[in-house]
Image 1 (tube, rainbow, N blue to C red):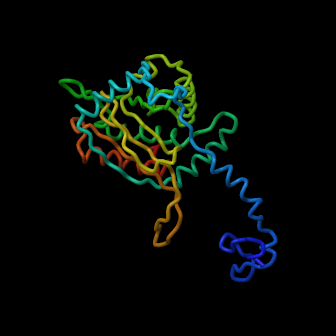
Image 2 (cartoon, rainbow, N blue to C red):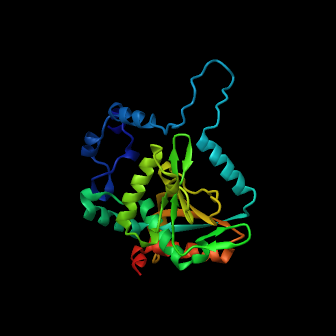
Image 3 (tube, rainbow, N blue to C red):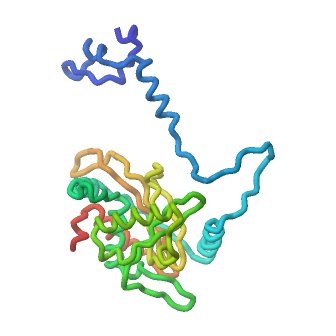
Length: 286
């Protein structure tokens, strides 16, 4: 019967004894023709570059002048990867409690706005930096400047590059306030309406590519800052919890450190604290 209907039994959930597929399961199964439409439509949806490429003219290539923002990015990265001795630390975070806390908070906020995972990460990072001030620093020519305030840079992709708006005194702000400010800054960044004082002066930065299904990556330090974290996507993974195999929401974070300022153990201690705060959001209240 299944063969005649063109239905793959492996794709059905049986309602019969022991999970067996019975006649009514076959009758309820969508036909291959009915299911092919949405699948094809979904498969045709791909991320599209926001860069305004010139129309093809038949030439082998096009030379596009650098925009001012692309010139700035090139200059800053050239002064980062070369002179700065980078090293990298990666950890994996259980995001179950953070996910539950976010859902509860967004229900409570209602129409006042929504808190994203990135907002939670910014808040947790700022709080962790207060516990590890050696990471909240700038490298200067002949000295290291340790900041007493945490000004969090958040990388935002714009049409032809990247800009890092700054949430000042993030360690003192409530999560909902960070969420509102981050959303406003990101929107103004994409509309090219930021003032210079709004994208300069960060003491530490966060770059998040999780929305693009990137599991893990490394970010380039934005000098004179001494560190940046690169955040991957949150994915369901099988893990062992108290001796039982279960599915948990997990996320990888990679920290890029300037070895002139941050030693390996110092960066590792900071990352451990950040992991603990994300896995137990109530720790941010302490």
